[in-house]
Image 1 (cartoon, helix red, strand yellow):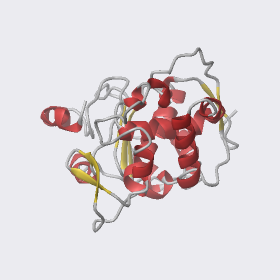
Image 2 (image 1 turned 90 degrees about the vertical axis):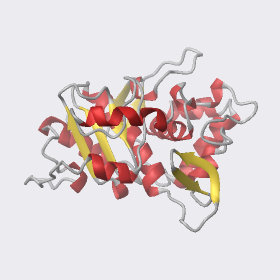
Image 3 (image 1 turned 60 degrees about the vertical axis):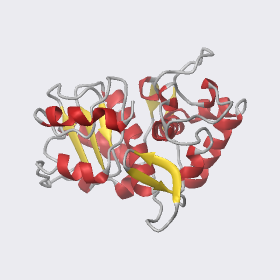
Length: 265
């Protein structure tokens, strides 16, 4: 479902929580920076004292102490996102299903299991990396891709990733199959294709490589990510997903083992 379909619901959701975009329970989406400025304007962001300084994006009072370290060590390992992310908000009042994200801000459901919150955070950091860090210039020609009213410019590095499987934001390239995507959800649109592939590489790199050996589209996506995003990457997780011949629905729901050197035992 495209962004325009959600706009009538935004006013209602703002009455219960400052959200970026309402979506089904297993779906995460992106929202423009201009819209984020409106949605997050009501949030104060006081910096809290800590023995170990937190990134500014994680210094919001609604982030539970139990998640601060989890998100901090995850963000430390995420290229692009750590340079661009400005706001992270946690809601534990049941007002959002799972997560929302855009080019600079992320909103997460804090009631989910820690491993799922982390995976969702990584997915949303994929959107931040794609929409906020990898950007084209305003003077460049249109690429043929639009995120709602936002024109993606031809010199945006992400366009080459999109074009592996897409001709525009709605249309798959001729001959594209389900196996050309890391998950069923990644076939939703080019931005979910990017964010799911980003998450799959980060948490399930070995399985990504295995599948890429048998699929040219996945090989090209893997190569693009290693060329433009994960240029100096040290793995901090091992995927535990056992492939059964089917394309998984959502990468953020796949099991993994977190192995960051600063992780709590």
